Image (cartoon, rainbow, N blue to C red; front, side, top):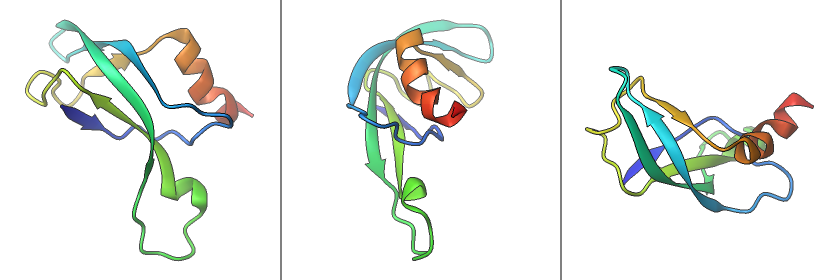
Amino acid sequence: MLVIKPNFSIPEAWENRTEKVLVITPDGLRLEASGEFSSTHVNISDPTAPIDQRWRITLWLTDRTKDEVPIGSKIFVSQELKDALVRDAAS
C-alpha cells in the first residue's frame, strides 16, 4: 500500500470512496491502481492552524508500492471525482 497526500480540502457532503485510478510514471508507464480517497486528520501542533488544514483528503493506492509509483508520477481520476474535489476550491 502506498499513501499519497494530495493537497485537497474536504468538500461539503464528502463521502470516502474507492475507485480505479490511472498512474502514469515519469518514464511513461501506465498502471491502473485501486485508490481509496479518505478524509484524514493531520496532527498540527500550531493551535491557530485552521480546521481546513487539519483535515485533508488522503489517497491510498492499495495495490501499488512506492517502487511502482515513483516521485513525479501523475495520477488521473474520474471526472466525477475531480469535480467533487475541486468544486469548492473553484468557488
